[in-house]
Image (cartoon, rainbow over all chains, first blue to last red; front, side):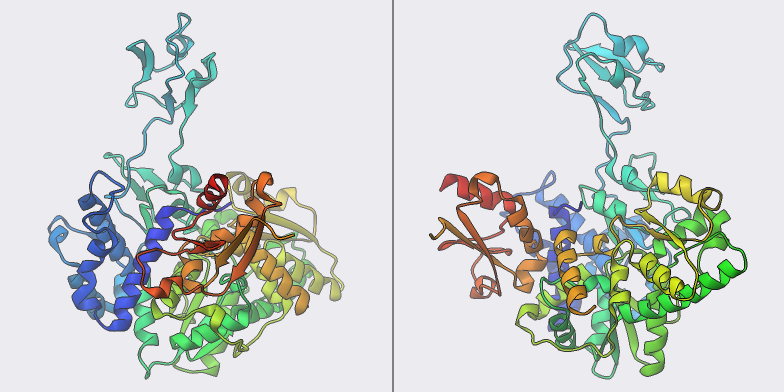
Length: 482
Length: 82
């Protein structure tokens, strides 16, 4: 379940301010005013003071301009945001190399080192099981209450189990708890750092951090620059999960995109139709050659997870390109030279797009939404237009868990191959353990679908709509256009 | 019989993107005690954002009262007090 949270809203408000300045052509001269506008002098501060809030806002804007906050040198602290805008102009997409996600250390609250904490429910009892049973001697009594020394505690949890009053609680570090691959860890100062060699770009840490300290390196600037340039032709490639993102029909979103300045709008679900077809052919061929099973390959975070963590099952992953890549390839042939911008719910697609020659840039739905707000385009007030390339229900179902497997298994059955399906709906630590040995534990002739986000792309980190609401729209659309 | 409260949720893009999306869950999350008393309707842009007031989206109208920075908690709180 995704909860609405203030950190996400602040990010969107900043995106709107940034995009408004780009539309007005004043970004280069006015960008340094944004933190002041967002946190004006008389407003209540969230952190210790308004100046800390503004400092964090400045870092957020750096991330929105595409920079990795970690790369800031000590002397850069006095740099203006305008100088970063100038650097974007000069370096272009080269600045986006390396990390996908960036941690704002100034925003990171350096959460508790020890996962256990004594609450005021402690009665300072005589038995003192917590002290008696702590293997590290990390607990002592202070003012009649047990206290855990964070520097000594190893978070074994024995004290919490031993306390008869349940006064010791488990307190997670939200980003670390959310990360399925232990890629985010505290440094010696307690600030979180992402290990790029482990990160699969699922975006969960970003959603989990209550301080909004993890941010994507946005490509809003690059995309708006292209869209605002009449000489530059642009193609919006909209992911299947876009259905229901603006609480209205898909056709209106298509018109809104054209009003923004996109020259063509293509449903990536069309590429998903192609993926389903190719993936079925591949699956049937593999089965005929004696393979036990094959897994889907459309979820980029899963593919990254295989590459970085469970490379032993690499041979089981389908070689069929993802819907995004097939759509990009198709669009590149249809409109040569036009810039292809994938618009989706996904952080990991950024990495996939950078590695692909068929996609130039990636926007999330919340970025698109913020740009529309800045441009004053109201989706509900738009007429409906048909996309330049439409898809079938098969491709549109790729947005939800079970959609890919359903398509492949139905098509394989048409070719005389009866297959079972196995869904990994959400990539957590348990799913990892099973996947590692999946070919040993699964029935013959199984198609395995893996979605990193539980529920599928509608639950991705870049969505606007509550997934429950989005799903209602998608189901309505599938019913009307079976 | 008309209901006691008519709640109009603005689904204009500005409201929807800046927090209004969550308000679409209002009907599902409405406490049982109010279910019979409220009528929830979605609406195109209420124009509240364009009138240049100081309020922040998302906007919601409860009968004639215009609520700014609306959230499900704020709406339910309002219903309790009225």
